[in-house]
Image 1 (cartoon, helix red, strand yellow):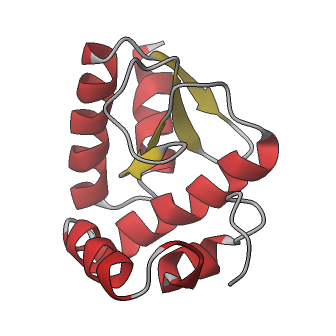
Image 2 (cartoon, helix red, strand yellow; image 1 turned 120 degrees about the horizontal axis):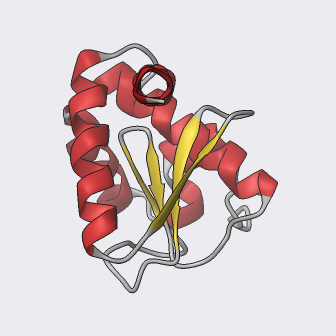
Length: 126
């Protein structure tokens, strides 16, 4: 079972050591907020649902973990898996890049949201 957990961490972090460390922290954080943590095999991402708070909008991906208060639909998990890819690509700097982009081009105009698929993320194109 422990080996399976390690394989899931590698998949969720897309093989990035930095993203794996961030994902571990996100999973601890999600547990502190009461999350039920499952692993989505199709999209290779941890889904931390049932949280009492601690996330933005309808959910937030940190590393390879999607944090949310509800059980997400398949299209939203697919959208968030792209954000996990972005975390693996940019490492810890993704958080700053995303926030800077969100400040300049909020919501549906954010290039990271566009890349993840606006419709899948529940956005309306502006």
